[in-house]
Amino acid sequence: MLNSNPLLRRFAKFLCLATLGLIFLGGLVKSTESGLSVPDWPTTYGHFMFSFPLDQMVGGIKYEHSHRMAASLVGLLTLIFFILIYRSKQPTWIKRLSLWTVVLVILQGILGGLTVRFFLPVGLSLLHGVLAQTFFLFTIFLAYGLSVERQKRMQSTENFDAKFIRFVVILTGMVFIQLILGNWMRHTESGLAIPDFPTMGGRLWPSMDSAMLERINAWRFDHNLLPVKMGQVHVHLMHRVWALLILLKLLYINRVAFARLIHNPLIIKTLFVLNLAVAGQITLGIATVLMEKEVITTTLHVALGAVVLGLCLLLLLRSSPASYQKYKTLMAKK
Image (cartoon, rainbow, N blue to C red):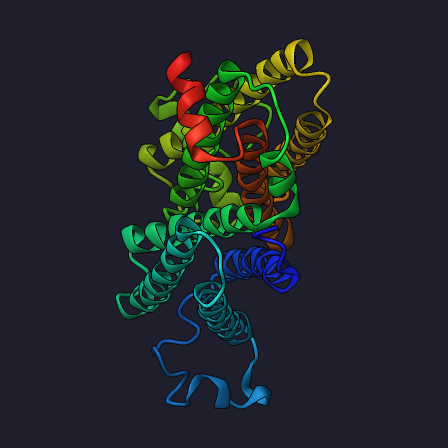
């Protein structure tokens, strides 16, 4: 088989896991507010990154510097992976996709440096977080393109449901938007702009008036937090409402899958794991608010969000034809 190289397959899976670990570390940097613990870039307090003394990695420095070293490692792995792919007999689209991963990881590194140089501006920080999720999707796409599963599917006859595929495309887009909203919320310090749950500003549905803002800021004052503005409340509310819409969409997709694709174990199993991940993500989101943004809980919420996005892409890949030409033909018929 064309994609039977076990080294490439294992390398691709390892790159996915390494990227997820990097997203966790990036979330940890923000959760601990360590983004400027190392104020220079690309050096670390004047040292070459990998020569920085380990005994000086204390406080926020250990989070920020660990994140930088892990990012450099992922960048190196991405470059090595591209070289291996380029020298192999993989199809052109896989080689091009691996090249794009190199471009993305370089851009991500530059953006990370610029966020430090410009003292963590919201726009750059938001773009840095979104690009990390995009890079993660590329690694999953590459890993699936090289997988034995895809090769077997290409050699078999399958029936596809175009309606289900469209629903999964929409769900994946919704989750991606939710991660943008989550990044926006974190980098505008809106994580506790609505500090209560299941109520919001003291009511089941927020009144969004000055009285509500006063109640919220009174709570924040009692907890030694700076006051928020109504704009921050809006950002937080959008994140909650969009999460509810994602849950409703996922429930509808479950209904469609069990009605029309119950005999496809690959899709049903993937959907089951996705259901568990979304349930865990909602639980962590609630816990993040109730535990007042406890560091590990908040960071796990960020990382599991990436897992949910990755599972949505995997569900899309498994429910779609294994080749692009078959996919275009299917969608043209519908």
